[in-house]
Image (cartoon, rainbow, N blue to C red; front, side, top):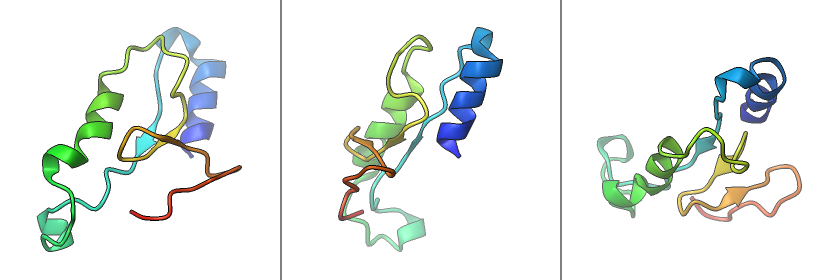
Amino acid sequence: MTRIQQRDFDNNHADLKVLVNCCHPGYVDTDMTSHKGELTTDQGAIAPVWLALLPSNVESPRGAYVWKNKELVDWVSGPVPSKY
């Protein structure tokens, strides 16, 4: 869905300069994980904060899935991460 939304913005709303990305913060120690996550909230915030602060004119990532360490994951061609 992220790739489709980014392509739509690029093709039909380029003047808005919107970036659409998604990320997996990892298995974070929160109430949602019953505090079993192996990452602190600060560690889990690395990729989301990095994405939130990207300037609108970047070439990459655009329509990407970003792993917790800011690695771009290609779900079509692989490889995919093997652990949370």
